[in-house]
Image 1 (cartoon, rainbow, N blue to C red):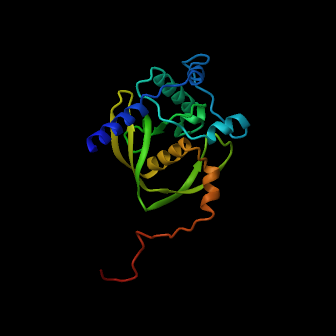
Image 2: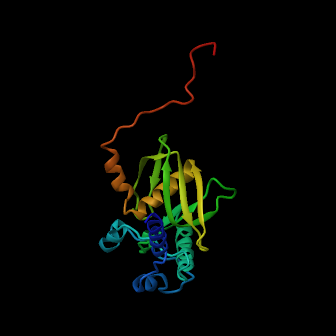
Image 3: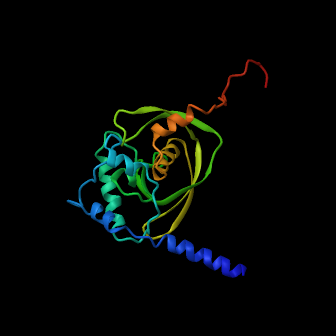
Length: 210
């Protein structure tokens, strides 16, 4: 019975990643010139706001239209004024795909992540400013975990697992929030009802001895 259960779980996992883009999603991804950026959805447009609030589903890394989506998301991000990350819902596709600028790597490349999942968050938090490509002129300060553990897939369906820290970890947390339909405007309301304790790691000692 146990072997059967394990087999069923493996089959369910395979089935989840066999999901393909719907006809409507394909039409959106391939609309117009596929060598150009997709438009970024905005919260001040009611129909677009609804898409941004929806939870996103996993996508098969082998779907032939996925590289087109990733490239058009990259072009959309590149066309912004200083954007450092973008999620598929922000171009109208409720699928678990994000692009993040990796400031933790040489030359800070923009990389894609398919079906990303944060499996661990540090209890140590940073507070810093964040904006959103989908909310014009909105900017505030938020608490985010200083480090995270991340699982994701590439276009070859290969699974990756890594630790990410600092500002890059903040970007991942922001973009993955989008996959759950969470906007920073919602996060701001939530944090108003929470309390945080400030820790001083490098506080100067008043003692002359150790």
